[in-house]
Length: 308
Image (cartoon, rainbow, N blue to C red; front, side, top):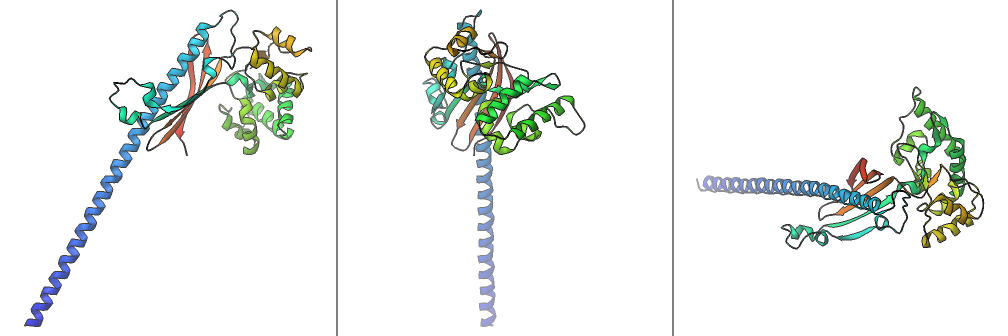
């Protein structure tokens, strides 16, 4: 009888221990699930807040471009790298941009904002390679000089040109017409070639001139027939001191006959706005392309994502 009672007590104790372990496991699982839900909710909330903040940064950039156009000479507009729009916004706490009475100051102290406006007409526009549904030979020659200066294979340029013609003519099996630089791989450019080209090219909705006041040295060399690399370097140094007010001033500075009428300008309509936001739980980047016509600044497209 005693042995039976001891056995019953042991079984009851074991059952109680198993029950306590099961309850503890369920409680831990519920706590983890609740923590995970809160963490996901917090990340999603910060992501949504970040999107709104980056939208505000884009509006701020549009105001800067609009004021730049308003303060310039409407009869002879110029855009150059000494203007306010060209100065990058270094990373700073969001609280630096808010009033002292902000109700969300604790979050603002942990959020960092940076950004930059870039002139897309400082680059060579891939759309210029097309004249209607045919290749523009003058633009093709300019791109040949660019590929040569960057030590890229000419075969890749031919592939790009043929792909553009096929996309424009909407041939069977042809790729869609690219709208972004990254989409040029659709036409056969390798990722390595595209990475090298990316800082010097753009894809705009229509043909556009190169801005002589903002183009980097290699773009000056490639886009202006008759210039050597040393000429382009000299002109870039001179431009840093005195931006050119017109095409005549550039031609005079070049010291030799160069053809820039119709292919170049000293002002710009297309700009890229990049905003970066660093938050406690996530970091976001947004890239936008805007078109400015006098004081009207409209957004052509926007894309955003998380930074790695």
